[in-house]
Image (cartoon, rainbow, N blue to C red; front, side, top):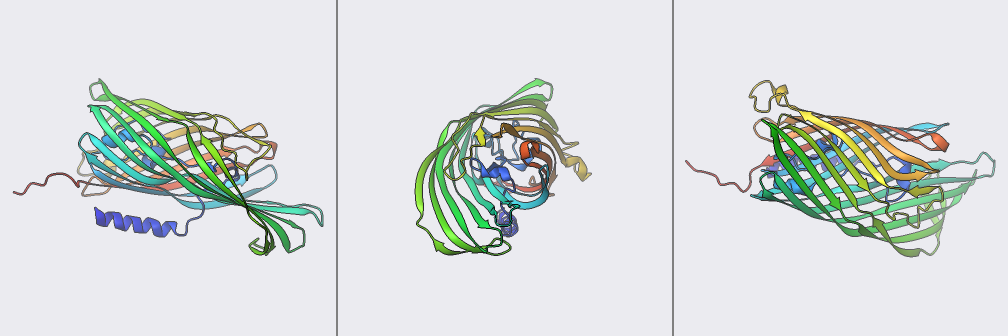
Length: 416
């Protein structure tokens, strides 16, 4: 198990060492950036559905699920996304590669614990505004960084089929925004750089329940609640005179004194619940709904008179099918086939236009011969935003891969 983890981890870290930002969206300027999917690929391939008590796969979204995992499990996932961005008058393409999550689960009878690391939000935009006047003022705005989440979860089996859990999260990261202002034909400009160092704690609570309703068919349900939490933001603003080249790489000529401001941001409370029906390791179909109140995420560097924030909501429908999980031949019959639909209201409103995100997802769970580990592949086709009122519409395609490596570390071995 340790050897497998080392090989897979080295592969992913070598891949991600050349990775771009986790976002290529101009909407990542607002709030804490573009919200990342905070679950594992198995859930994402079903539109975000996470209601089954799965004994083989980690479910990062609901801490109660760790009580169901029966193997020591290491999981790791990443994605490649190609995006076409278009407005009424222009279009362009962007590509990015990003790490999605790292997590470990350890079973101890009725108790299961887990810990891991994943991106919470990502900032990654590059916007150029040029003037048609010969000596007009131009701007180049760039943003990088984001917020990450480290978590420790505990799940407990109260009675068979009823699981509860909780996790504590430490959110941390840095967001860096720059705005270069220059006159046409003049190789010297003024750059404003804003850095926000973020950190804070949060918690999440979950419940999962399963009940047989007909022969081998089960009813599945799950609920999570995340209370309101605070983020401390230490902001540093620096205005400098710079030289720039044709790629808009800058060299500072004369930096001014930096200005530091401290601000507390509020991440509002969130509730998610879902239900469905299915047969364990055979099929399942269900729905998931998530709602989040309005938070206070506007910071010193990204306040905009055109942007406001509303309530977040997400609706998903998804499921999976396995032809024959226990078959010894005909490998394709052991493959898990997943699919889902998702519609999300992001809570960002620009010029009275709500920025929505809708997607269709497909996935495969490929068993690794000789054990219960598996490789998971996923595709997602989606659209975010609108071209109305001069805004940007993003049409994106995501290919994702993850590894779920399972082994028994704490079982008793018999010697015959």
